[in-house]
Image 1 (tube, rainbow, N blue to C red):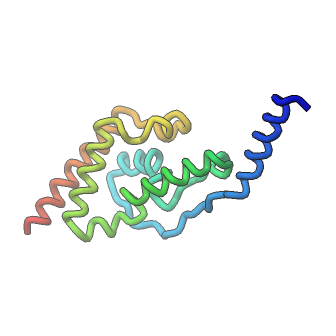
Image 2: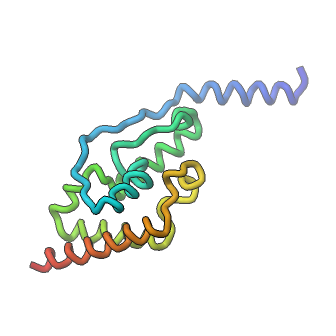
Image 3: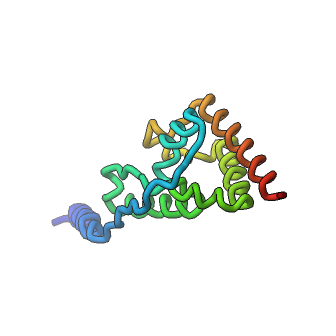
Length: 152
């Protein structure tokens, strides 16, 4: 067996072996009462819930290492920053609500959300200009309401 063939076999065996290190697929909590106008809600559910909720629809490649490691790390980090499943929890504290609304507005307005790799892999991740504008307006209004509530 020549060196090149041996290299391919070792590489293939490594890829097969790392499949034993699967990441758990978890969608744990019940819906958290995310409420918004219909246009905003449909856009957020389509483009944001995949990473920012406990209602992810995991694609087939999310179970293949090492890609699964990246996907699970990204979803875990996204859920820590903003989890629409816990939306009601954010609204109990006006300061938290104001920060979440402000972050949503900033990230959508800047184009940082949804991230480029999600937009490339999923048509659901592509927001139209009208959807972006609706989310931004909703977030601005929500932040203003939360700041008013915080000052009282």
